[in-house]
Image 1 (cartoon, rainbow, N blue to C red):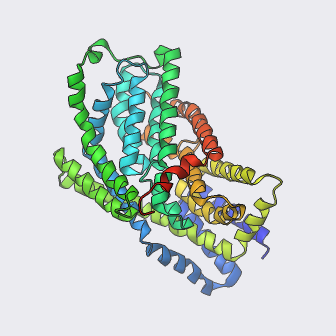
Image 2: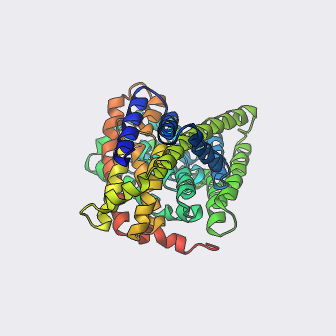
Image 3: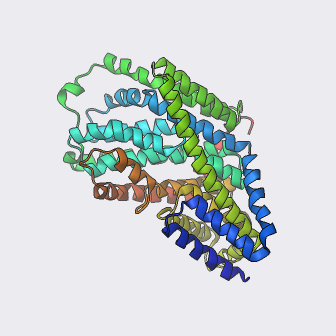
Length: 439
């Protein structure tokens, strides 16, 4: 069968199965099995089995459930509420201060957990009602929560970096460190945008009431104790990786222990928290596993049929510069991000993109951070961005889906600007990994 026909078969088959309501993991797996049967007969289904079993044996992948468990426990331990109160008092006099507080807390949460859902849901429950009571513009309030919560994709310990490293062979520890500066850059841009908008139009995010602004410096410092536990968890996870003391998998286990310690200190560690956290971790890990099984199987079958060489030749023959090829790849990911899950995008495209990036002579570490920055946009991109549905699921009734969709566009624009800055300034990514101990 001609490789062009095979490519069309995959695209049409995927589209039909997804429109029929089949989950992404099962859709890709079904198409992979059908291709095997059509191309090589029943005995070739062993290809799918080999892909699944090799994935299950991956030591690096153990880091994923560790970080998911850590995020789940921290979400339920009261740490987020303490951080929000601690940061809020310092930005009370500033227009848009509550929105900036939400972005700051989301940045810290990203460095503690590595997954998006926990930050977005927590901040929607804690910060959004406070902003609405303070008469904040709905778009500013929802947008800062989704944009800030999305930093969990980029700021380590990001699950996406774990999966990218597993597929590409790039050091997960270096990917973690490479994501730090771009993540902080985005956090700064989000805060600057809110600050400028609220300075130009104070009704979008009024300052805190006078009684909240009269809190003394000593009281502010007392509230700052809410930072102690989060900072300890961050140092435990990222410090051990940067210092060469632990692998990402070992750091994930240490972070999980640190999360339970935080819950115990806050007197939230009980049977209910343990049961709910383990259940949430199991569900998220299984969902990720099924997505991975299907996507890797499909990419493997397509590669054996000559698909990888076909895509490489097709893209490399485009009349654009090597950097133009990278931009085209980013555009492909942006379009896919509007339609399918980020994990599915990663496993479907990275095995196809990596040979092209290597052939063009680009640094895979730099490309990995670019790719994950792009996936962060997918969590917010209409019509199917998961971040929008996380917010809608727990937001107050007065927040409509229209409000949420309108809120994403300015922050998506900021993400595009940041992506272009990192594309043309690779040192933003590679500088910190080059300083790692034991790299």
